[in-house]
Amino acid sequence: MSKLLSANFLRLRHSRLFWAGMLLMFLFGLLPVLSLYNMHVRYGYDTVLDSTLFSYTILIGLVTAIFTSLFVGTDYSDGTIRNKLIVGHTRIAIYLANLVTTGVAALLFCLSCLVSTLALGLPLLGAPVAGLQTLCLLLFGSLLLAVAFAAIFTMVGMVCSNKAAVAVICLVALMLLMIGSSWVVAMLAEPEFYENYTLTDGEMEVIENVRNPRYPTGVWRDVLEFLNDFLPTGQSMQYGQMQVAHPWLLALWSFLIALGATLAGALVFRRKDIQ
Image 1: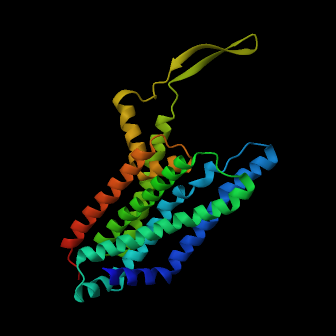
Image 2 (image 1 turned 30 degrees about the horizontal axis):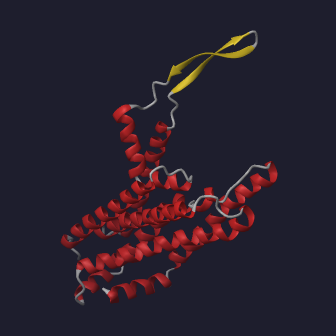
Image 3 (image 1 turned 180 degrees about the horizontal axis):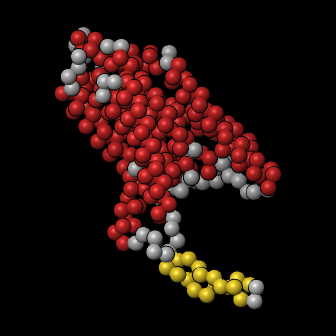
């Protein structure tokens, strides 16, 4: 497997797509810092670096989907996987080597964004105010989320031999997950009550608080909270907005997603007919 990894990392080092992703993530890390600094200068708002530290989670799913689908898909389009099998490499070793490579790439994408955020944010916004333990925990969870994304897209890339189809499947799946997570967040953000106003002598007065029929309660709310914590795109929103209520739980779900995707993908790939 060491030879497979060496060959993959050599490809990674010479991949224009990988370096384009690194550059994109680096530039993306500057945007929220500049936005917060502009708000501070123009309007006097109090700003902290914390809210921008994990902004990479918003974009990492998209960048990883594009990179993984094309990087893994090239193995099929160039006939590389068949050649690896011919020279004696096992299917499990090939699968794991690709997973490790895409996982490392996803982590480097995240770190590229984090470096630019810190490089510009520290002098402009100052040091983070959150505790070191909290920041380390969120960093660990967010990087584990990136690995989960890589595991999901590697699974798709390894079980489907059409590079174009893999790219489409990954992007469509990511888009559907983002739409679903946005809907879940919107449902959870519904207020339990809303105020009913009346106009008295030209002034608005509250006459009663009316229960919001759209406010989720009971089991339905538990399901929505589970989906918000479980879906990778839901986790991305929580990390990106620095609003993570259960960091250990999110890290656990990311680990289980990565593990489940790896086991499922490896099982299918072992039985796949490779022409």
